[in-house]
Length: 391
Image (cartoon, rainbow, N blue to C red; front, side):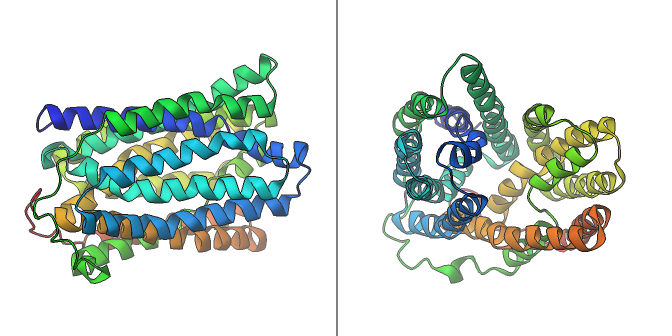
């Protein structure tokens, strides 16, 4: 890493991601059961809550990134976003109606939308270019470790006799740790030229190379539907209901294992070859799901699916920093997140319709085909020549 300041930020943001996901995943896997079993809400209410939550995130990610560029600082938005989410999330344990849960989830997602782009920009500004992939890989590995630990902690508390409400309220503990780390451990150096960001707008990120990259990511995302379909495929292939959480936990374990090696590899070989390798892995995994009919195949494919995340999840974000200068990097990360979000919904709708009309094999092959198309498009993405930190 560049210096002690950079190492501290990388470590800090990794620990923040870990503790935040512990707090979040103590609640999220149990939320549908809480809504339907305790609050007696219907499936439609679950869909409304999650739909509103994810729509909120997509727009706020861009706006917060844009504002951080204009403000010329990342940490105020980054820390405030984590603070909002972790302050309101445990309040689900006090909810008496699904409408209250909707408001809490909305506020939680507002926090996520505010923090995401400034966090990614701050991480990119904390390291030298040759270590960027490893830094993002570490952050993703810590995130997935938290996503693995959270459900296991919740399961242990359930076996220990805690109620759902009690578990949700206990999520305040890792949440408070997250807030302390966000406000006091991570530091930033204000971007050079304070006050020069007022003219930054959507046009500031409208560079041909970056727009083509966003289009490429969009095509890939059109074939990257919700992972709920993978769980449905697993169930149809014979994986028992009781084993689905274990299968899901193994996927997060696989993601955590491969995230740092994938980032390190991108620092050595370049972002495009590693992303392309990841997308080709995705295509092979989805082609495998199209034909899988045994539980053994499902377990192997879920583990291999984690390899795709390790090769792409952090590396795609590192490539954003390669393409765009520091002065508009917040906006660039916001635009990247927006491109992913607006194509994720039609991806899942299309996948479901194809599954229903032509079978699961056709749906998975469609996803594999779009991944292959995006891999070809990626060949034509041209990195810019902007200076790394000054931009």
